[in-house]
Amino acid sequence: MMDDKNTHEMTGTLQFDEERNFLLLDGHELSSGENIEIRVFGSWIPGQVAIDSAGWYLVTLDQVGIRLHAGLFARSCDFRFSQQLALQPASQQPEPSILIVDDDPALLSALPKTISLRIPQVHVVTAQSAQAALRLLQEKRYDAVVSDIKMPDMDGLSLLSKIHECQPETPTILITGHGEHNLAIQALRGGAYDYIQKPIERDNFVAALLRAIQTCQLRRQVQEQQQALELYARSLERLVQQRTEELAEAHTTKDKVVSLVSQELKEPITRLKSLTQLLRQKLENSELSEIVTRSFGNIEESIERTETLVQELLSTSDIETQRFILHRQRCDLAQLCQRILEEEAAGTGIKLDFEGVAGPLEVEVDEEQLRRVLRMLINNTQASEHIECLTTMTLQQIGKEAILTLRDQGTHSLGSDFYIARKIVERHDGHLEIQNFPEDRRAIFVTLPLFESNQEQAAESASPIPHTHAIWTMSYDDKGALAKKH
Image 1: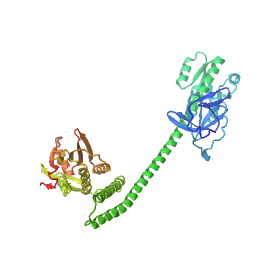
Image 2 (image 1 turned 90 degrees about the vertical axis):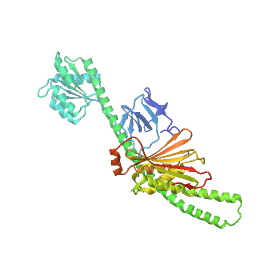
Image 3 (image 1 turned 135 degrees about the vertical axis):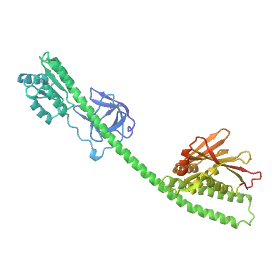
Image 4 (image 1 turned 180 degrees about the horizontal axis):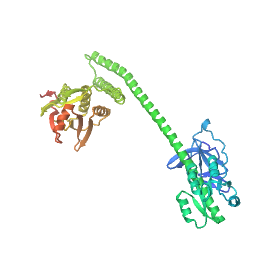
């Protein structure tokens, strides 16, 4: 057996040392029982090396023997056979068998003698009629059949048809009389491997018989290799199915772990947040150094960020599983956006301007989830403190869809919150896209399907030209104080 050091190292084409009858892989002398893989039609087939009187072959995991020949690409491998698939001693392959069918006793006696002298390793069986030949063909598989084309009861052409039914891989040579070219053509068209004319010339007959035997053996080898490939393909399918099930199980386990860890993290974060707030309240009337004040601010900011990350982790886990459920209601998208923007502007230095151009635009959405999406996107817009650098949000209708467009300057990298927002929009049968422009400008597009009745109206007057329903402008005032404009 190969040692562990050589495992995975030997790769190349198989070679034969004919003098010593050795099989070589990358200069290494392979012995019976070694584990290798051979490449057949682009796939690696593992097995154990074995040898019998006919030569070297590979026994696959499914106990199928594949003949090894020089030039076959192979590599060493370290798989192990189970006890059920342990390599069994290979039985010697039987000698090629030939069936000769003729009603002429003289010819039936002369042909086997000729074959035994020229091809001594071939076993010859004779039959004096087509019916006797068919009984023999039912009992045993032959490597070639030689039959006279003219026989009583059933001629050679009818026998040829029967042979194709019971042993289609067995080549048949028909013997025709001198000048019977039409019968010879009929024989070839009927599927005969070759034909021999009387009087039979020994050299031509033996050469044709050898070709027929080799053809039969090659056909059977191809069938065996096809069966081996089919078995290997089925084993690969089973392996892929097993790995897929394992991945699905691992994915489910991952979701459970993420949910569990996130839930466990929420409690200490909440407690830490409460303790920090309590400590700050206790020290409000004390004279604190600038470092302590700044440290409290950093701690509270870190706690808030950690809290946000835990919530995003939980949201991601919910979205990837069946726990995420939408509660859709019919609402006016323009009014919903107005309420959300007013809430976001409250307590900040944002100046909000609103301009309503057209009537309401109804959609069927989960208001809480859509509110969450818009808050995420608004928080990600980076408006400059200069008045001329604005963040605008436009609500438009194009055909059967409502499109919200947020435009800002000073783009900010989007994290897991954008992933969550995109998934929520997709669960509403919509789309969320982002597009960057020169001078650090950016546009975020949220597309949602209109409510059914609105879709019917839109279908009647479908137009590629956008209809604007509302425009919101967000900017900072001169003093940075909040100013609302209705």
